[in-house]
Image (cartoon, one colour):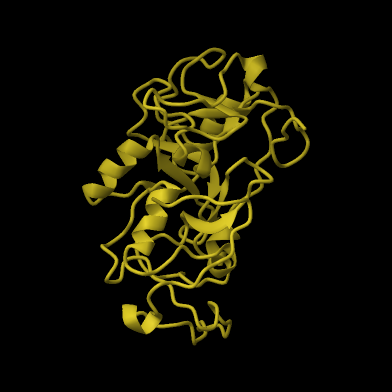
Length: 277
């Protein structure tokens, strides 16, 4: 089993080389002249001997999927150097597990990074909610009955719990944001929905597309991201050949549903949730 040792882990070489795996090391440039990748390193998403696209995984399973073929998890620096950009599975806009720990932010935490720099540039700063979880009467993230953790520390999410006025139904982006902000909550980020922040919170929206705070202007001018409301449903959609996330126009009426998030600690007007120190 893959284990964590210490807060800072040296990056060991892969057991197999790029040539052994049949992967091509970084050695080129994009059409705009910019270089990609890290010299002497190669990266892939679904090329053999990988067994196709990974889907959503725990850190341990992600590491095992790489190490089982003699590869390794990439470092944060390698992902941010676009080492695996455009290597398949439409993962350029997904959070990718890295080798880097972030224990200073979360005990035992590891860093996940958007899979390509052009997608990372689309991620907007996330302002805290006007009201806190305790003010709203919402419970911050906890754990499933099987012991697995859900959600984002210091964040809570709901679909129909007061002071929300019941289930949202299909809404435009503007109306979805208003439904949350009118009670002092906010739209969830894509990362929060994909961390199951609002999973099982009512309205049978786990298998519906949920509006998020995240833009996707590289796919659609002015577009915003909508994400399937729970990972177990997203996995079913992917297995059926569908999309777990879509880019929608904010000008379209009634195209996705609203689930709202809030922060356990007030931090307005800063751009990230604060934590107790």
